[in-house]
Image (cartoon, rainbow, N blue to C red; front, side):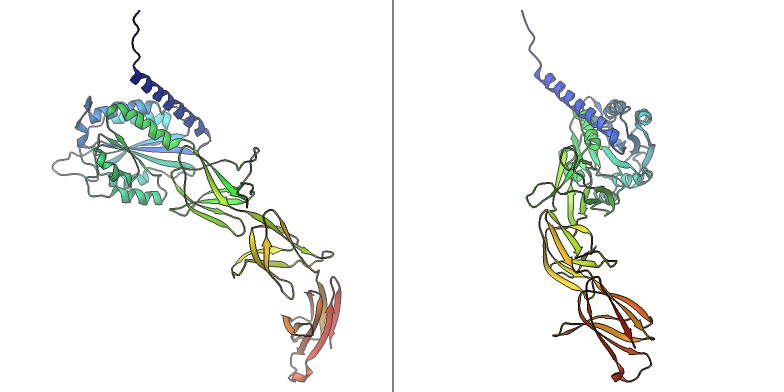
Length: 467
């Protein structure tokens, strides 16, 4: 019995095709929870597409493979397609038309536009030159306004810029403005040396022969729309991702526009919850801890689960009033140790989380209480107590000028000024010994200054009359 020897090359190719199909199906399944993907094909129909390439001329090979590829896109959800062509309306002689570009098929759902684009490509005849930079600039208006869309450009070309434009500068500028994501560039029969030329404007794929053209198209599609996941690990002092319940803002690092806002969550499995982010942008992350944490120029690897670690070890500060709570709740200015900038103003009776470290507190009682080197430790509560205030009920016989001073027998410290326009005032003060200096308006003799000494006790009212 004679058995035929297996064709290993065919087997390998079949396995590769099956794996690619599985990957695409997974990508398409994940699209159900994704924003709308809008793919603009920029198709080269310049005169050079008449060149011989493998089994036929380039334009015929491109038409055939693009047609098959477009047929496969009809059932993909959340996908819209459009077609722009260049080099197809004006013959290259007697002179080049460097504005020869046109949106041939505007955006619509893939199930409708895949057929329209295929039909339009079949009718194309290569005529003109290669105005890549100008075509990219013109596609700004192709992407109509959309609040939840990812704009993707796939440029298919067999040549480099021929109109003295700079595709790299145009591409980078439009990416910065958020017009589209980093383009995909498919070079049809190009010399490999042009990889660097196109690499600066987008992700370049070299199609060396017609056999791998369709594989490259499928690979580009998979990379363009595959779901990419991210988790942000808010690390405690032991480098475990246990911190949570903090708001996070992702900014486009180019445009500085807010792209995502999330409240960090630990999921049911005890892990930081998974997010879906656009993999073709670079992000700046602001974690709204106290003080906030910034992490800049974060790159997301497409098609995989990304982990962004952030050192965010925290403890709590609890501001408490000793004794029974009165009607008077002071506030506290919180600063990092040795710094002047205020990072938070915290009310008494409230607990707040802070990054671990040392802080200076200025408690806005009368008189003010200043505490230095208050340490916040991982997962510990730092309690700060202040005595409950007492108050004076001050009665004046008319308008005048005066102040209150803390007098501990060693030094006199100004506390506050009186309101000259009020005949009665209620002023909350910390327990201690004080004196009040007052002179009625219209009295021109300094010797007639009125002085009152008094003691404040917690939660007690001290009545003072100024005769």
